[in-house]
Amino acid sequence: MGATVCKKKKGDDFNEDVAEDEVKNAEIHQTQQKDAEEDSKIHKLLLLGPGESGKSTFWKQMRLQHGDGIPEEDRVLMVPNVRENVIVYLATLVNALTEFVPNTTLPQEDRDLMLSFKVEDNVSRFVAHLSPDSVELLTRIWRHPDVQFVWKEKGAATQVPESTAYFLDERLPAICQQDYVPTDDDCLKIRIRTTGVLRLEFQIAEEQFLLIDMGGQRSERRKWIRFFDNAVGVLFLCDIGSFDRVVFEDEKTNRVHEALELYEWIINHDSFRRSCVILFLNKVDLFNEKVQHQSLKVCFPEYDGPEHDPDAAFNYVVGKFKEKWKFDEKQFFFHATCATDTNNCEVVFTFVKEAIVKLVMGDAGVF
Ligand SMILES: Nc1nc2c(ncn2[C@@H]2O[C@H](COP(=O)(O)OP(=O)(O)OP(=O)(O)O)[C@@H](O)[C@H]2O)c(=O)[nH]1
Ligand SMILES: [Mg+2]
Image (cartoon, rainbow, N blue to C red; front, side, top):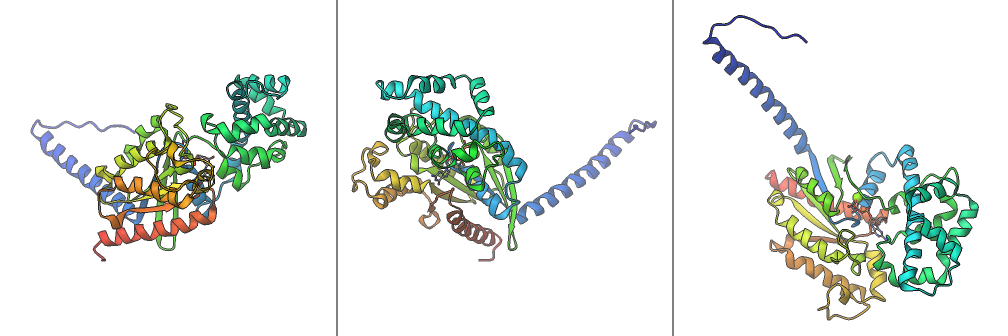
């Protein structure tokens, strides 16, 4: 496009510039108004919480139930992730034998193979040649009593995700097939750290939602703030199933403590003064199971409730989050959730939807 050049008298410039600015301003104002109108129709919800708390799992559930599902091409892209995760996590457990079971009876050649996977290229090469023989080999190593001991008794010290058992117990034969494509369940259970921003727009009855998922690890949280404006709801996830684990980032801070601190920051953030913050105490399935043999004292040494009692332990954790909530008690919303369970997510989202719609209608002066 060419620019037009014309001769003007000195004084004309000012008036013309003002007129031009006015037109531009009017245009910008119109666009902003349109955006705001569009925005006001969409309920923007943010998924926030520490790394590995289950945000993307919940996002995927919404995509499966209310979006376009998970397309074949996205599933195919996940194949290397699934395979490499399984190999690397099993290798991590074998590696931990050195510390926890120095006199292990796992054959030396199996150990050597697994330890060779510290080198990334070796993993890729092994993954490229997976076969039914690999199923037998990997199953034998996984089921070895020393490896099982590390997994069951020392798993918390290894940073190996809990879903690893699902893939090694149930999915190895499928994963090792040439034409393997992850199922819905595989997609929900695979651990892939989020580094970008995932958006999902969907509609339920008359209501439109925009669900935004971002990475929760410390380095990723810097990106959050850009998305805070106009969020009508925050779904804050805490992985209570990991009450005996420390965060990946510093390998020191307890995961529930990290979540408590982050939750406090979020609920007091100016951007969310008029938003609905809903707490998801996630991985309640793992929590209930773990509490049977692990004391909540590893996370809260002052806990003096009954041991091995999931309800008492759960209520105690709820109390810890409630202590942070300095606002109207009736607005303290929380749910016990299991993001890998589709039915549970649907029930919980029905509640979220109602709370959000109520808030929006209240703001519009309907109540
Ligand atoms: N057992 C169980 N596993 C869960 C649950 N929710 C999530 N997971 C698993 O936990 C792992 C981490 O979940 P993600 O959804 O990737 O966690 P995230 O919060 O998105 O993590 P970042 O992207 O790093 O912030 C995955 O392997 C999930 O399958 C749950 O309620 N129960
Ligand atoms: Mg994620």
